[in-house]
Image 1: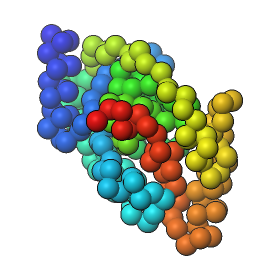
Image 2 (image 1 turned 120 degrees about the vertical axis):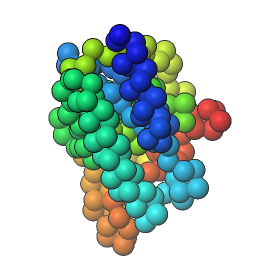
Image 3 (image 1 turned 120 degrees about the horizontal axis):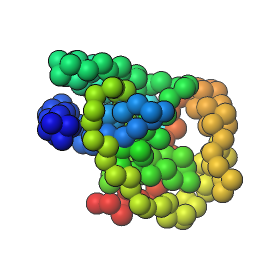
Length: 196
């Protein structure tokens, strides 16, 4: 029964144009994570207004997907709560996705999937008795390209400095007449090219 619910939910999510769907566990609750792939043609031009607009439009699309998945779960008799794609505090879609077997967290603090880091995510927390996916047993290539390329100096061997990244995105890019989404770490990650 639980396997069929999990399989039906994944099939439904794929029909909603999700490139990635997994089930994990966060703080004792099951979580469904859905991901869409970002087009290489846009990511390769980051930072740009087009990249920023992709981030915004994909968040809207993911929120619509999460709403539909939440309703699917509710119709199956369980409670569910969608976590907005653009959530900034208190929940990590990346860590939820790693627990759902969709990838691993790299040096850049990005989720590295079968498409590299070129994905956007949304999560749905539920009490449905879904079957969790196995985690990915892989690790970052440790090539250092994200560290070398980060204009904010937010990525280092010691970790990721969220404040430095946010400052760069919200202040420096804005002063240059661009919107707040750099994307250089996403663009330069060789895991994207390795996965093709």
